[in-house]
Length: 640
Image (cartoon, rainbow, N blue to C red; front, side, top):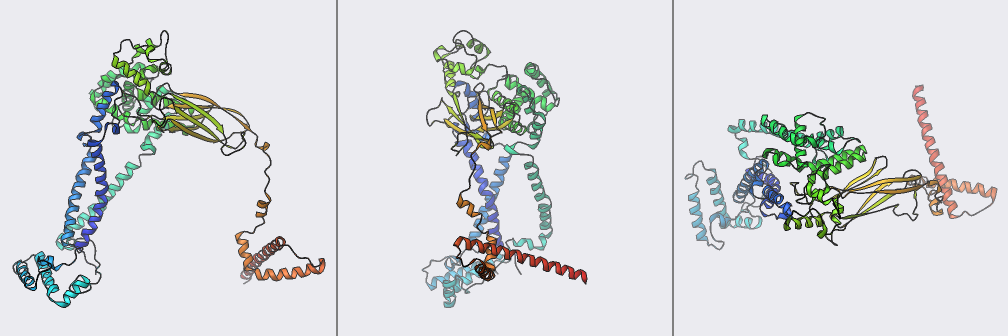
């Protein structure tokens, strides 16, 4: 009968604890490295202009230092990992000292040198046996076990047979048989612990494990692609359509399921503060479609950000707004994916523009020049007057620095910030080409797989240089520059829309679709920034498709035609099985033909074709015989 074994349990426990503590310590060390040893570039806390200094300082406070490790999840995991590590160390020491993994070493047991003489061995044996004798250590199983080990060690060093067995097999008793036991501690079999063991088993099996599985399933089943909740996708499907305007999108974003618990008003103070903020941003808001407190609060906070009036917010409201902005990028991408599913090009483009506005803290009627540091509406108006004037950001970038307007009231440092920002802002050119890949004919025919090749070149980068973080001082989190490439019909249906995230100077993107029916078509190609306002590129892509019937007739090569006469695998197998019969039939047929037509030698191709025909006839006749026999059997059964 198998017995419970403490030593085996040590190994089992070590294995299971290792499975947990190794990845856990890796995660903990990774977070500690980010908190204490990461550089400013690693966390995006860089200040290329003085306008970004406050953002960089806030990122350092929230992404570096001991305060970044105050989350309940990290603390709980750290405590559990430390406790498991202590248990792991204790088990390891127990295995080293008492486990079966240790080889039998009589010298270490008797605490003598390997070159000790017989006199020293006897003296050590007498000393150790007196020390661990059961009479001097009553009710001490460890001392009793040690006393037996001392006796066995003395025997291994003094008895010739025992010494030979120890040298050969590592045990003075000779070669040992394999012992199999259960890797559970022996105290589980103690009758005094029966109720405790049963209770622990019930708690683990009936409560802990089902609750863990239920918790994991309920949490994981809430989220879909891009870690966006399914309820959020349902909300977007309900509220986004081809008539959705950019002004409606803050309310749509505010209703996301991720914000419903956090944005719930908690008392009269919250409602009073919300009313004050609403009075300031109401003129910029679209008439709300929903009166739910969560949607209203999120909508008001987003408009406070978009209109750059966050100074009136309390610290709690600022935290709620930062939470919304942290998730805004993935949620806007989810909006675009919903519009793609609905094939609504206009709504998708409005969602992209909304993402630009959120990043730059601007709203629909604001001047594009507000993306420049230190610029306000006054400077934007001044820059658009006189010559050279600039009402768009592209026009302003095209003016030399010494003649740029709107800089009169700025200090030297502020002017340098503006010039630096102008270098950071994108300057792109877009080239397109329509063709059918791997086709010698330049024409496009109905049903061809067309490829629209879009080449985006960042002219503000040097060769080999990669684009950096987006310059967005009022967006509290670092963001990478990316471009949306959308192709749609004139009727507003989406053919393709994808996000290009490559930071290279030259980026190639391919859009593939099947060519429509014969005719001339114009498609709209949109290349739009995910973070900057006013740098969008739109052009028409013309496509002329020709009737596929005008293609030259496809002629089958003779070698390919002969493949149709080649036997299949089944036919070859049938031909092999009835080879003898086919040979005899062939001889008789050839005799008859020779009598009627005279003797004529067949070519190799004719002979092979005739063999194949005979095999097929034989297979068909065999199949007919089987069906006949089956029908006869059926008739006999009915007759009986």
